[in-house]
Image 1 (cartoon, rainbow, N blue to C red):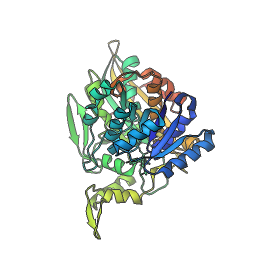
Image 2 (tube, helix red, strand yellow):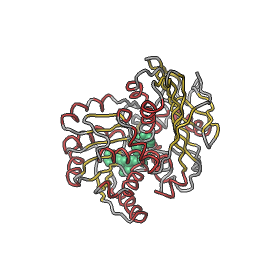
Image 3 (tube, protein in one colour):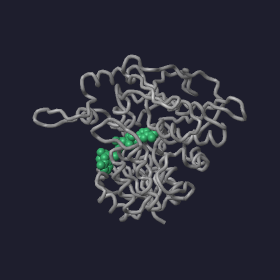
Image 4 (tube, rainbow, N blue to C red):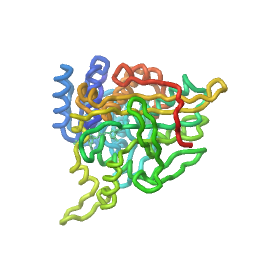
Amino acid sequence: MGGVLIIGAGGVGSVVAHKCAQLYDRFGGITLASRRVQRCEKVAGEIRQRTGRSIGVAQVDANNVKEVRSLIRKVEAEIVINVALPYQDLSIMEACLEAGADYLDTANYEEPEVAHFEYSKQWDYSERFKEHDLMAVLGCGFDPGVSNIFCAYAQKHLLDEIEYVDILDCNAGSHGYQFATNFNTEINIREVTQKVRHWSEGRWIETPAIIDSGSVHFPFEYPEVGKRESYLLYHEELESLAKNITGLRRIRFWMTFSQEYLEHLRVLRDVGMTRIDEVEYEGKKVVPLKFLKALLPDPASIGSGYTGKTVIGNVMRGTKDGKERAVYMYNVCDHAESFSEVGSQAVSYTTGVPAMIGALLVKERKWKGTGVFNTEQLDPDPFMDELGKNGLPWKAVDFGGELPE
Ligand code: NDP
C-alpha cells in the first residue's frame, strides 16, 4: 500500500498532517514536505507528542516538477495532498502524472502576476489524468469543498431541483490582533480585494469589491453566533457549481467581515500595500503584498488564545415532490477546540479536515474515477459519513430565515 504525501507545512498542512496521523492505519506512510523542512519537523514533533505517531518529512520546491516527481517516487506516495499555494497547482499536477499518483488540492490555480483565479487550466488536465488512469480532486477544503458537497448531498437527498444557492461563511472568532488573516495572507488579500461576481440566470453579475462603496451586504442570522454583516464576494466554487448543478438559477457567496478589518484593508489598498507588482525600493525589487505578508502574523501561529466559532454553510432553495423547499446545511467549528486538538485555529481546521477525508476516500476507492473532478461531481455520502466522525459535525435543517432577493 502506497502512502500519502502532503505538500505545504503551513496552517492547513499542519492540520492535514495531524488528521492523517489520527487515521494512520488507513493512510499507510505519511510524509509532510514543504519549502522549509524545519516547518515540517516542527509539525512532525507536535504529531509525535499528540498521537505517538511518526511521519516522514522532506524539503521540496513544489514549483519544480522534477523535484516533486522524485519525491513522490521516493516516498512511494499513492496520493498527493497539495496544501501549498495555488501557484503550485499545475507543477504538482504535472508531477503526479509523471510519477503515477492521484492528486487533491484546496484552492484553484493562480498565476503569481495576476490576481485572478479560474479552473480552466486545471480542467484542461482531465484527458491526461484519464489517459494515466489517475484521479485529481480539486477544491477539497471547506469552501470550496464541503460547500460543493453540501450541494451534491442536497441534490441527492433533500431537493429534486436546486434553483438558488447562497453559501454563507462566518468567522465569529477573535484572535486578538488588530489585523491578521486566517489563511495565507497573500492569497487571502488577493481574493478579498477583487471585484465581486455572482452568477444569475446564466450570466455573471459584477458588483463593487467589499471595500468599495456600493458593496453588497446584509445581516444574516447565523446559528449559535447570531447576526453578522455578510458581504457578497466572488469565490471559486461558484464557477464549478454554476456549471455542474442542473437547473440552477442563481448562486452567490457571502462572507462576514468586521468594520475594523474592512477599514484596515481599505487603508492598506489605498497606500499601495496590497499591490502585487514589483516596486523599486533602495535598489531592490519589492512586491508590496509579499512584504506586508512578512509583517503580519503568520496564520499558522494565531491559534493560541483564538476564541469564538466559525459557521459555514449553504442555504439551498428549490423544489421537493412538487413543493418549494429551502434547506440550510452547515457546520459550527470552535477555534479553541480545534487548537486544543491539533494546535491550529478553526479556519485551518475546517480546511484541513475535508482535504484529509477527500484523500482517504480516493485512497480507499470510495471516490473512484479517472480525470479531474470538482467535489460536487463525486458521491457525497461517504464524505458526509466521515465529516462528523473526524471533527466537523454538520446539520441539515429547513430554512425559514431571510435572504436578499
Ligand atoms: P500558509 O502560507 O500557512 O502555508 C503554505 C505552505 O506552503 C507554507 O508552509 C509554505 O512554505 C509552503 N510553500 C509555499 N510555496 C512552496 C513551494 N514552492 N514549495 C513547497 N512549499 C511551498 O497557507 P495556508 O496553510 O493558510 O493555506 C494553504 C492553502 O489552503 C492555500 O492554497 C489556501 O488558498 C488554501 N485554503 C483553502 C481553503 C478552503 O476552504 N478551500 C480555506 C483556507 C485556505 P514556507 O513556510 O517555507 O513558505
